[in-house]
Image (cartoon, rainbow, N blue to C red; front, side):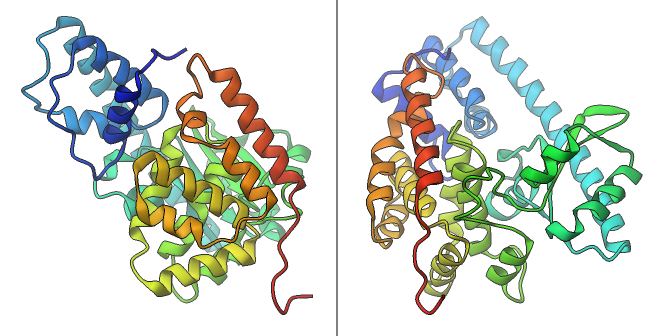
Length: 340
């Protein structure tokens, strides 16, 4: 369980987690900073906090705190090296897929880091996610195997989930995930889907457009995971900031209707806007007319739900997030005008 934070300390954590926010000028105690560091590490935003603390003359002269900071910075350096190694293997696999004429794209981690974050090191990643059309999964699996990886998941179950986990034979810490759809829950997939064809339609003639990146971030937060750490909402926050034009906003809402993620879009934008006091995220969320499922989901997915994932309220957070998953499974697809 994480160290408890006061309401004021939670606001500090969120400011440290926001890549664009100033670190603040408070003189914090060693105890408070240690608790914030532990929470930041759990929530996947530690690199951002370490960057903001770098060279800060206001740090208390506490030997344990400085020892902890040194240890965490060494771990961050190792994580950066791991990300670079993953990127190398991802590039190798993509070249192999191209050689076999298998359309594919890398999504999430390294693309978010490069496209959404001013400081690439703010967004480390622990695997490489590759998306192909479902019909090409078997061929793509053979390419990954030929690149020195072995399947680490059950094959039949992987086809059902549209997700294959591959581990490098010489270094099992290197994980590559092959997806036929970024929505793996079969109960949810009857309503929403985000695969290679959908992303190609969202992007149009470009690649990794702001609308596509934000759509992926929304699905990653609410469809792949269940809001289990702040990093998911930081990706969404940065995706909102990258949405620079009315045309990009229109493309986002078109994407939501096409993929069926209007519920997820409304809920994730709402809680992200509340967490980081991002008015634009809240304004975008309000553009989606709330039905019963959205109203119920907003009562479940709150700032306390996310901040309480591994706190004393972790059981309450887990129950609320599980209830949200059932809303996702039971929600009806919205009617699309002109579509039979």
